[in-house]
Image 1: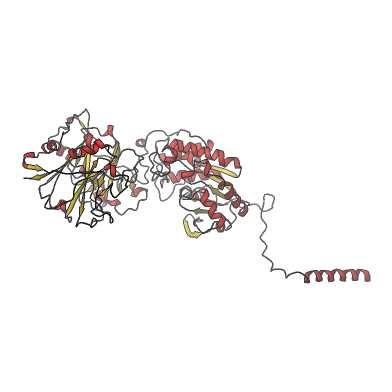
Image 2: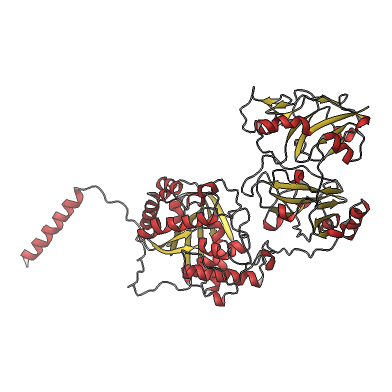
Length: 628
């Protein structure tokens, strides 16, 4: 017994001595609760789901309505997170993750409504809860470029698995741009939608799938491409690349729910409360998503074919194009002006209210119905886009009590450096000069005076605008010179003296430029790439161009009547005078307005680069006639 007690005391003494010879132990850390694994007796809550996206605006689009679909699928506890940086690539994500930089806006939805917190760090988001799924994606501009995936793809996935070992990884396969998109990265794919789609698929198949890291590939790009074969057509984005607020976001959210939780689309009735979709649109979306689920890497034709005019023209949320009403008053105005409308058909155009085109930015209209908050959106409604064959030579454009801007594009994928000017002429007959170098045209309508319209005025704006298309070929004799333009428009050349104008080629004025002011911009002082589009007149004062002066431009050409209040000052107004293609402008005090000096930049319609021969032609295309 003594031996046992002695041995026990010896052990205790050695233990005390060993403890006393080491540094004090730190305070014990709290013990994490046990992780429930597949063999643990307590299973995960089948009514709970959490999904975190590491993305950009495309993940915002895709997840906007995901909560509603997950609710419909039977989940009661839903937590959605989105680590957002606009246009963020894998490379940029990796850099922020490595340094845990507070570079993100963190969107959260746990009640059906999204909230956001700025300056958020990625590790904080990853460790904020035990995520069921974490999704990743490549920036849209790099989505079809395989070389942009390595090594960032694996690095980010490794970081996520370290912080979220239980989370299943998702890959969000994004979509190709709209065919007429103006996105700066579209040239990476030769501005070819199908080429971009196939490049995205190839990148996923060669870079993402071989890693075997991802539980699901979410083929949003294929769902979108499938839907483009339906009657909805290529009308799924709001700006050429972001999803439209109704159809586009509905499609991508449904694709996520179908792929991740197996949503039964045949039973799905969810629709976003803040958007309007027709039954036919929803059925087409379901068809596109189900086919993408079955064949995620190839396009499958829609079971709802056709064109937008077959029922997809209301792809703008909540907007139905009003039925066109024949415009008897304008028809009579044209007849009274001496035109025979026997061989004409009135064009039944579709009017989009609270909307306008801006050909210097895009061929996709800015619209209140797609979320535009432009302060001038209530000043316009728009019509178009039309090709030459739809508005042939001889077409009559009639306008009364309204004005319009005939926007134009040489190519729908290419923006113009300047826009066509506004037109208030009651009757314009389309000729080759009206088309100029343009291949497409559209119309922004506005009420006389360019007012902010009431609802009633917006709905009746089409009462003052009509287009009459000839049903047989119309031959128009084009004036050969500016004298003939005067005669055609009812003026007698003998009552005027044609001014001798010296045009400076490869030069122009910019009266809104605070640096150049009234200085001529030319090869001597500028390397501007658009010098080859213009020639410029001298600057004239009011005494040089008295009331009654006629400014004449030949068909197919245009000019900008720059204006200054004084020399060496920039334009006193907020914007430069617009270009005009009006054949004859009569100078009066309203034309001068607050300006005391004016000059003219002369160019071809559409502002293409001019050859030397075309530069030499300018002297015969623009003229000023002084009254005798």
